[in-house]
Amino acid sequence: MATRLLEPIDRAAIAAATAALLLAGCGREVTPRVEGSRLRVVATIGMIADVAARVGGERVSVEALMGPGVDPHLYKASAGDVRRLSRADLVLYNGLHLEAAMGEVLEQMGHRKHTVAVTDWIDRASLTSPPEFQGNYDPHVWFDVRLWMRAVQRIEAAFSEADSTYAAEYAERSAVLLRELAELDDWVRQRTLEVASERRVLITAHDAFGYFGRAYGFEVRGLQGISTASEAGTADVQQLAAEIARRRIPAVFVETSIPRRTIEAVQAAVRARDYDVAIGGALYSDALGNPGTPAGTYIGMVRSNVETIVSALMRSDVSLTAAERE
Image 1 (spheres, rainbow, N blue to C red):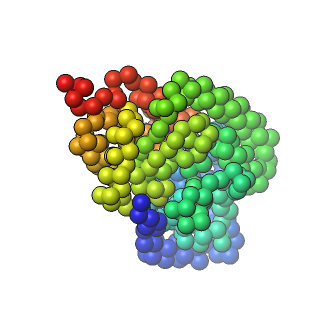
Image 2 (image 1 turned 120 degrees about the horizontal axis):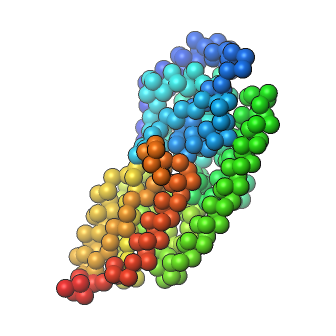
């Protein structure tokens, strides 16, 4: 697979960020907090924002830069984002090069403001570093619920450091959430065991689900590699289509933050080999669902993905050749 990892950096946004920081003065705090006021938090992605809101409760005000359907690999900071970042007391981001096009903006912010990569406390021995990512780690750690629990603990520590008066409250809410995530992890393990071993193959547009596969026993294939900036060529599509037809894999999946056309091209190439592969549904990979929907929270997103995967791969009528369907 082709591996063009990073899009060109938005220099204008970086210049705006630098100017904002210089105007802010020498300290990290851009706008002094009023005693007892809520901690102003900006998170890059929805998965972080949701956890931060749960841990912070009424003591924090959390804003996510990237909403539903937004691809963090390619996202570039706007002038409005720079203003939101400048006003924040604390900036939370994933790290591990997930927010690749925002890297320099986040670095500039880090010189003047409290910024935290929520993956900092994850043991690097627990991370994967696929060859096509050129020595970098796979950043999609939230798909292993146990790994994401370390992000919750890192967020709690960041809140307690920034707002020590309410450290006990942050610890209490974090403990509640961690218990829920342990239960979620157990549920995922039990639910995915319902899929027969020969059908436990997860094919998506890009390799976001590597940690999911390792944790819960799935072979994972992505057409575009870990970064969505990589490009899938005709040879990649044809190679994957041939494997799907040969192994009679029942379903492939689209992702809500990536255009459907790449997986639809695979589906068409499989049909040309006299085999019908279903599109099993849309998975939430790099972004949550819409607010107020079941997938609008981290826990809801995980549950929605698992139900979609299990239901599609367990269907008895999908692994048929075109001739068998007639």
